[in-house]
Amino acid sequence: MQVTPRRLVLRSPLRTSWGELRERDVLHVRLDWGGDDFGEGEAAPLEPYDRVPPAAVAAALQVYESVLLGADPHASHAELLAACAAERDLPQALAAVDLALWDRAGRATGQPVARLITADAAGSVTVNATIGAEDRATAAAQAAAAARAGFGTVKVKVGIGDDAGRVAAVRAAVGPDVAIRVDANGAWSDVHESLANLRALAPAGLEYAEEPVNGLDALRAVRRDSPVPIALDETGDEPGAAGSGATDAVCLKIARCGGITGLMRDAAAARAAGSEIYVASTFDGPLGVAAGVHAAAALAASGPVAPCGLATLGMFEGLSEVLAPRGGAIAVPAGPGLIDGPRAEHGWL
Image 1 (tube, rainbow, N blue to C red):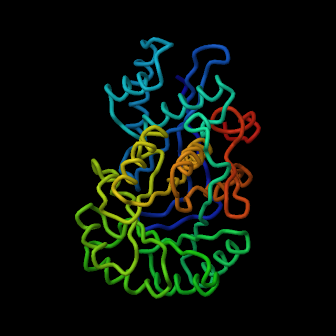
Image 2 (image 1 turned 180 degrees about the vertical axis):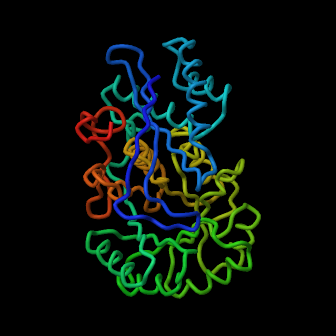
């Protein structure tokens, strides 16, 4: 196993309720069995958001290296992943191994990962635009630009200031036909505060409010009286949260689920509980976003998937053309494995 740190720099700082993001550190992982038998993945912990220290992920990857070195090279994907999890069950680290194994399988068969999951995978994934501005005028301008570019959904970060004014300005800018999703990242302390804020935001007409408060019980209580449909995000860390039916929708993330395999499992649980689903990025690097695109495309073959939060690579310097959205959708990479082309050409591997 080869583990290489990579740093991605945001074009503009992004402020959220959990802090300001200026750069993103990820770990590129290559599993190599010799010759053309290899696969590449990515570990993308984000400590201010998921409370997982990068050092813990690096340590887990060292453990996994020993496990994989001692494993039968012909062992199945499931067996190799289970062996790693048995030694250290850390989803943000397991995701890198899972992605590399999917990438390996795609390379071996000449197929994109989405088509390995299901032959009926969609050819593109509808995505939302993220509005990161903190003031009304800039937020409105960003939203109007997103609408002109073909996005049918925009997401506005809330819990960071003049939320109601900013969301109202975004609605005025995009008109009635573009969906608005707000993301609080658990900013509000309790059910009462969450409901008060959601009632102030509701006149703008919202698709979902992501994670207004943390915790399954609190989310259930908010949902009962909320004028806005509720989506689960960070609370997905709780055991069984995806399949709890506590919220109208579940936001699924590659790192939190432990990779594509875990995301597909959690998606099935969420759907069985009656929740809508969509896939989003924790501002991952290209391999993490590619994995999300493949997973979302495969999920679309078996049911509706709400617009996904995967149009994030353009927020980083030098990555504006990698998995870039066109008309509000990202085309699923058609080459073998996770992503098309020699990756060194993009300057991020």
